[in-house]
Image (cartoon, rainbow, N blue to C red; front, top):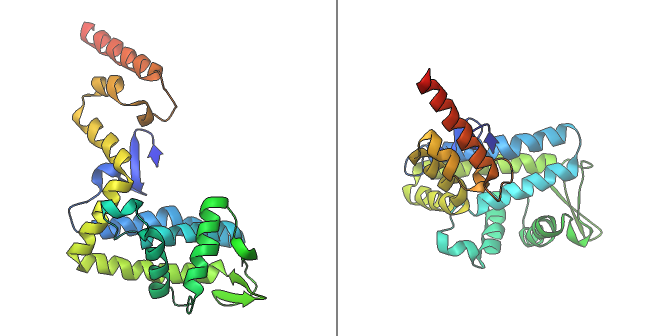
Length: 231
């Protein structure tokens, strides 16, 4: 997320401050997930937007399930297996084959088509996470949020205690956010004037394929410096 000249990994945490080689990473990951995913999902629930809340929560599960991937496995067939394993082990309501159906019908349907397959649904109409009705899988996102929060707390503690797992999570972050981390690293090596000339177009909030915005910015900075020196 960009605010002004800064790219943020999580609320209050710039990408330049992400602790990829240290012990602060688990807390920073948790702050990202809560600030950008779980808190917005809670706002959707308060407004009774069940589908929007469920969509955010399924995306959160997808991210949590993949934190232990290494760079080579990101494009392998292991993503689905990890999602199903995470759901079966960490979300208590998905017993039997429900973890498989959650992946097939909810995760794949929402990720690829913005819908739930096999007539599945999100609803507030019963006081538990999962319900089967006429063969359809129905999920109450309010209760799913509670299970995802518990899973996040457990995973955060594990990353704090397990250096190897923390290193895998850091590698996952390096791969997923390679562009953002590259922009920040590039900017930190440049002077203010050279930044305006040399940052790639994607580093600017506006689409600037010809570099026009960058060149105008550089000219204004140079003009301002000349005026200051002349004064």
